[in-house]
Length: 533
Image (cartoon, rainbow, N blue to C red; front, side, top):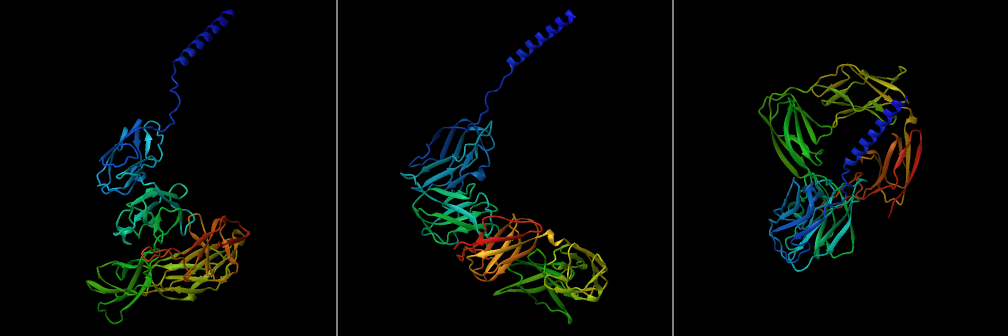
């Protein structure tokens, strides 16, 4: 027993010695580097006057790397051609700026690197470093600041470019489409902006959210905010710019054959009222009709009988604009008659809608049968919308029910005389208590107003045009969190109207309630919306 204890003690001692030696030899590596790189010197020095160099070198105390330089770097005034900046993609202890543009006299230039500079090892960012110089004998120190909002949406896009265009002898309204601005800044995390090192003068103040950033306004893709009146610098005003997407002007795009007897005419803007007239000679008994294609800026021109021709000539008229289109005709397959329900879950206040792939000529109500889960027959009224080519079924619905729609052959006859096969479709309703009701009481309203409930993505889920100070009721609202907003329908056309830069029109005013609206199943919610003057 004593021998075993001695051996055990020996092993414990050896283990302690080995453990002590191992710990003694382990390197901790020291504390983690959390400090950003430090600038050692700049040649020429930052804030230099009478600058005439073609190259700037900025030295750091450690290796740095550049990240997202194209997105982060802002140069004011804009340089064309842009300077060359190295290194890109490799670590270095310096940044070199090669100036390729001819510098303007008596002008202050600023290179704002944003968050593009970080140390190579830990990625510690050197935030918002700015290199400034002047080609004159002083640094411009004036600034323009403010905030960017969205005219329609509650949330504002991030990284919006705020621009100043100098108003001089060369200025025209089209400058925003063709030329780069004098000064550029980006919005910060709370949508504020500050354009610095600006010289005294008169400017057009604008903001752009671009799909393809190049600091010129492309109306089809970009969002714009602008100050209607020119601003003067210096100024103590904090400016507010409202971003909006311009409504695209009407433009005919093209016509093309898509089936044996259907031609699709694409357009931009408000083309639903476009008149389509066939100019080519047609045989006696020729008939045509027009439908709007769902979710596309396209009108479909259907015709019968099939024409054995090489091409057809059309005149497209929209207000005072007339276009001519020559459409080549080939041997295409004909369309087939198909049906698609627009929803399978019905609210009690909703109609059941069915869309057809070919324009419908007639409906035989005697060949349509609707039956509920208790085998009780419903007597619907059916309305055909020829332009959208949808059939609307109106009938009395009850809670938590299932409805079977049976359309026998011949219930529908299409433009070409084809009839449907037997169709069997279903739709259901929920308990009324599965939804919530919302009553909105407007205070200080200037009518008419468009009152809307929108979801977190800005999609309108309920809307009502009100022309007087009376409660607005939204019934059978799906439970969820919504935002309440009001559109001031200034021109009384019943829709929200966006702005237009060339016409110097700002978007219609939109106000949001301060708090979101929580809709609960089976609950009635009353919201008081006090509008500011």
